[in-house]
Length: 479
Image (cartoon, rainbow, N blue to C red):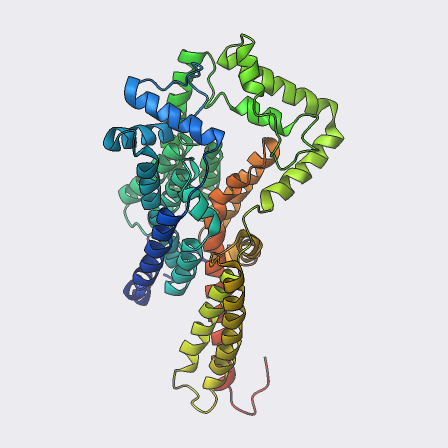
C-alpha cells in the first residue's frame, strides 16, 4: 500500500522489502563510534556535583538503607522516585565507596542505548543514511557527554522518551489490533516511567495522545490508540499523586513545582535570566520557618502567580527572555563537526548515485565536486579541532538546523507532528516555570532525528534531480 498524502504509510503496512534488507547496516559504524566516545567520556570526563545531584544521591542512599523515600528534611515528594530508586539499586549492588563510578557506568550504558535508539528511530523513518547521521551526531553530542557523567535525571529521561518514541513508531507496522495495543501501551508505560523520573514529562503524554488522535485512521482505531497511549501513563501518574496526597497532603507529582514556578516569576528574574544567581533556597527557608512541605509549595506558587498578575508586561518580556535562554547554549565551543557529518552524508548520496551506470560520461562530476568541497571542510575542521581539542557536535548547529529541518519536512516524517509537539511541550515548561537548558537537552535528540531525516531527504532529492537531468534527451525542454 502506498504512503498517504502526508507521507505516512498506512497502519499495518510493512516497510518496503529493500528497506528491510538494508535496515541494520548502520548498527556497526554507529555502535563503534558510540562505544568509543562514551568510553572516552567515562574514563576522562569529571564534573563537580550540583546541589540537585547531591540531593538525588542522598535520597537514593536513604532509600537503599532505610527503605524510605525521604530527604533529611523529611520531604517525601520533593523529588520524583525513579532516579533515586536507580541510585538505590546501584548502591546496593556496588556499595557506597564506588557509588559515583557505578552510577556513571550505568548512565554510560543508558547513554549508549539512547544513541542506538535515536539511530533506530531515524532508520525507521528514512533509512540507513539517516540512521548513520543521527547516530554519529548523537554519539558526539557535547551535552550528552556532560549528562552521561552527572548524577541527574536527564540521561534516564532521554532513554525512556526515545524508547517510547520507538515503540510508538513500531505500532504503525503492526497488522493485528492486539499488537497495536501492546506496542502503544508499552510506549505509554515508558512515558509513565519517564514522568516518575521528572514531573514535567507529564506533558509528553498529551503530546503522544494528540498525535494519535490526529492520525488519518478510522475513528475507532484512533480512539483505541489514544486510550492505549494515555491510560497506562496517567494511571502511573495518578498512583504517585495519590501517594503524595496521603503522605504530604497535596495531590501533586512533586512539591518542588512551586519553587520552579516562583523562580520564573519574581522581581529578580529579569536581572538573572540565566538562573545562575536564582533564589534556590526559597523553599528551604519556608520549611525552616515551620511550613510543611505542601504549604511551602503552595506559598511559592501563590507568590509566583501574584507577581505574574501584578506585572503582566514584565511577565511577557520574561517569557521572551526564557525562550532565549532555553534556545541558547552554555556548552563550550566546538568545531563544526555537525556540518562535517552532514556534508559527508550528502557526499555519499551523490557518490552513490554518480557511480551508477546511467550516464557514464558525466555521472562522476557531482561526486568530484562534492569530494572537493568535503575535502575543504575536513581541512578546516582539522584546523579548528587542533585549536580547540574538542571533536564534539554542538547545540549551536544541532538546534537551529534541527528546527529548520523539522519545519521543512515534518509533513513528510511519520512522526513529524509528534516531534513538534514534544519540543513545544518543553518550551511551555521553560516559559511557565524556569528555562533550564537541560530541559531542551532532553528533546535535542529528537531534533537530531529531524535533522538526519531532513538531510537524507535532501540527498534523495539532489540525486533524483541529477539522475533526471542526465536521462533527459538533449532537445527536451527544462521542467
